[in-house]
Length: 357
Image (cartoon, rainbow, N blue to C red; front, side):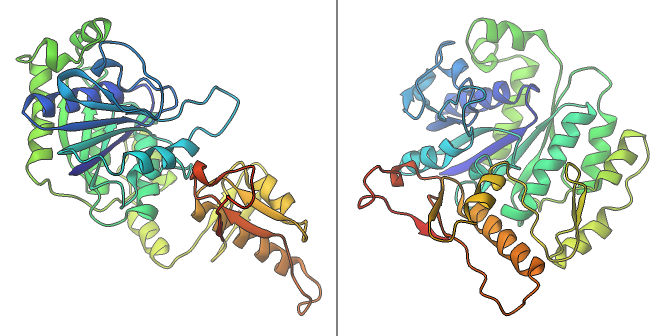
């Protein structure tokens, strides 16, 4: 099975392209599992005659395509990424020729990085338009991949045109990071017509130029595509690019990161982190930080294990650095992680299983 994770900024047509890729592969006689990884649970809509489905259940879609959507979370009520680990555990034994995962671009969250990790993806495809914020989001995705899947993980860039002259910035970005644009999809009203009908464009207009673009992506997927290492640009590089200048700082940044430096800035609190210091970036860090100060309690984080490790590391390092007596006992609560596996959560403590950080 070839597992492709498709990432990009929200609202640029990523789900539409993903659904059309799944349909086109199926039309070629391949078996396909299409996985929607967005809490809006709208990725499979075009493969299910325009309807939405219950989450974390596998459905039979158009042309025999299996469809699954991640757990939906109501806005303002929970963590959208926590259901992905559970979903991928459930679909891990489904064997198809291709698994296409449609993922939103927030790889800053440990949950949304799950589909792009080595154990879940053979390749990552980046979708972008020509606007600066879309390129900015694509660069952020590459920053995440540099950490979680750094070697030979990126298949290429697909440019989904919004206008007829929005190519230049994406071309300069592609040249700077060393990842090619493998396909350009023209702006077309046919995608809107197909979506209104609740069907993939490749199904309604199989001989159109737009459908042929989707076909070229499928040719690469089926042909053992060349994969590229993810390389991101600095914010200075991106500012240069937005101003029409050639980026110059990327090589320096990659050299610094190879030395395992964690330089970063917490703008909200006005703090600068320099040297080998892990900067906590998750919104749940504050709750964990407070709970770990209770030394006679167990703290259980329903999150990724690597997130829990960084939280405990940052907490203990701060305790040690702020201590006036260096040989005093630095203690905190016992810290556990569910590794985003909801099956480990139980009201009966004898049945619950957690991993110690």
